[in-house]
Image (cartoon, rainbow, N blue to C red; front, side, top):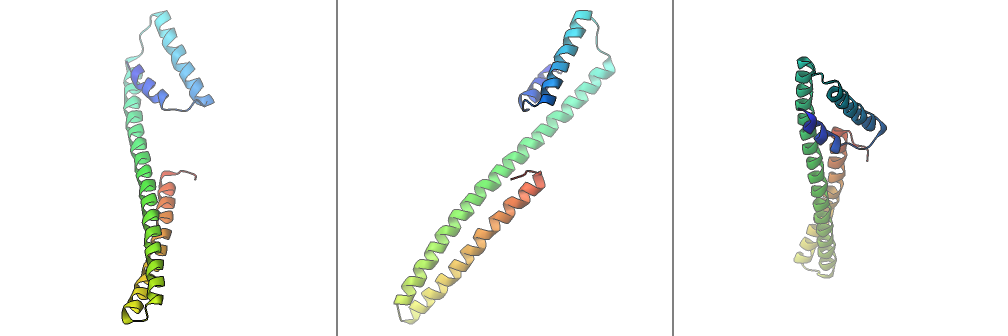
Length: 141
């Protein structure tokens, strides 16, 4: 009846001692029911179905949260790459601006300085975002 839900649940679990004991208990229980020819209490079956539905919902939410965490990590990598490129452009503008003694050179230096500062701020931001997401999902990193 709810064996397929249990199988899906068990596949996603690691092979800890507790999980192994739960699996052995479930198999032993099913074997005893078959051997004795007894039917399970309808209230127990209804309770198992309710628990299976809750477990299925929990695992769906857990998968969604992990997918969101992966998306945040991917976003962080992109932001870091953008920050590095922005910093390189800022350094380039500052170096070129220092060689150009006209007003355009001063503007290039100011723009380069602003880009370097902006990239440093942007580079520091994703670490906080990832830390916050780890905190929200209770993951030790």
